[in-house]
Length: 502
Image 1 (spheres, rainbow, N blue to C red):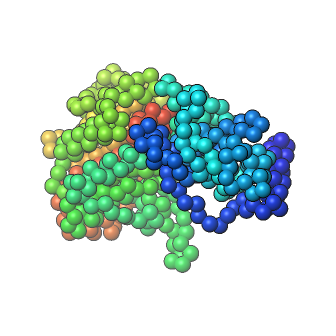
Image 2: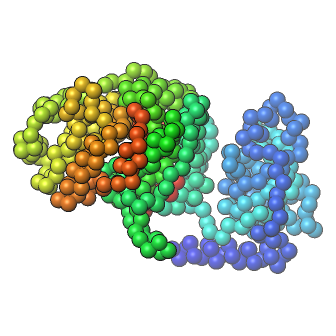
Image 3: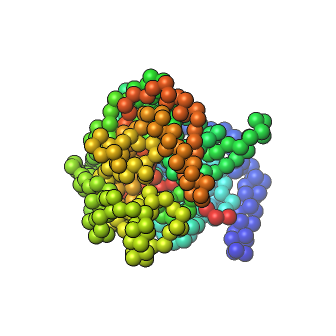
C-alpha cells in the first residue's frame, strides 16, 4: 500500500511540474477526432491516402523509451495501436521540449490526443508516426500491473485481475485493462438490441412501469423496502413488473414488453444477483404453447445473429440452440432424475421422501416450495441443453391459468439451460375470482412464515375484474442468457457493477 501511495505522490508531483511548464493536464477544450483505431486497421491497406493526417485519442497503455525514439501503445474504445514517437518528428516541439515532456511527465494510464500519419514498420507492424501530443487527462493513480497476451488468433490484449472480487469491485479498471471483459458486455448489449428489434418488428410496444411500488407482486420473492418521506409511507422495489404489464393488456394493448431492473432480497451466488435484468413480454389472445414456439424461434435466431452459430461453447459443454428443444413435464423430469413419481403425492409422503434425499426443509413449507426445491436441487444441475419443463402443479403457480386438460395443473413452462432457469412463461390467469382465491392462499402462507409468498393486490384484482383477454406472458433472464452467450462462469461477469459486500 505504501508503494501505491508513493507512486501517487510521484504522479501528483509530475502533474504540478507540468502546470509550471505551462501544460494544462486537464484542458477544458474538446479534441477533434477524425479516426479510430479499428477503422485504421480495417481500411489502411486499401485506402492509405486517407491516413496521412489523422487525429485520434485514447489511453496510453505501454511506453518503451529508446533514446530519442519511443514506442508506445494507445488504446481507444475500438482497439490498440502502436505509436512511433521520434523527437525530431514532433512539429510542435515547444522549444524542443515536447519530447522531453513525453519522456518525463506522460505516463501509462494518461489520456492523450495525437496527430500524425499511419505507416508500417520494418517488422510489419501497423503504427502511427506521431507529429503532436496533447495531454487530455492526467492519471494520478497507477493502472494494475498489465500483462500483454496474444490470443489464439495472434490478437493482442491485456490481462490482469487474478482476484475476481477486485475485478467486480473496480469494473472501470477491468474494462480499461481487459478487452475480453469489454467484448463480453458488447455481446450482452447486442443480445438486448436483437430482442428489442425482434419484438419491435412484431409491433409490440416497449413500455416502462414503476420500480417503486405500493405493493410488490408478480413473483415469489422477498422484496427490498424503502420509505417515501413526502407521502409518509413505505414502498417496495419491484420484484417483477408482471402485474403492471397485465394492466396494460387489460387497457387494450395487444402486446407489451419491458426490459426491467428487478430487485429480490435473496442470497447471492454465481447465478444470482440481488439486482438483475429481465425481459417481460405479454401478448393477448395467445397461450403458453404459442409462447413456447415464439421464444424457441427468437432465441435460436438470437444466437445465430450474435454468435453466427446456434452452437455455443459454455465451459466444457457445447450447447445447441437449434430447433427443436427437448420437452418434459415437471413430474417427468423429477421421475427421470430422482426416480420417484410425485404426480399426486401428499405432503407427508413428500416430506419423508425429501428426508430420504437428505434434503432438509422447514416443516411449515408449503408442498409447492418442496417440489420446487427438489427440482432445483436434483434436476436443474443436470440439464445442460435448452429444455422446456412444462405443466406445473397449480399450487406452484399463483398467476397461471388452469391447464385445459388437467385441473390439477397450470399452463406453464420454464426453459432450463446451462443448469438454470432462463425463461418462465404462463397462460395468464384472467379469472378475477379465482385469482383472489390464489392470493388469499398466498396470504395464509405468508402468515405461517413463507417470506416469499405473494401479497393480495386489490387494485390488480379490480383491473382484472374489467376483463383481461386470454394472454400469454413470459419472463426471460437477460443476465443468465448473457452468461451463456459470452461463456461466463458467473452472473457478476455480465453485470457492469454487481452488488458487493462493503
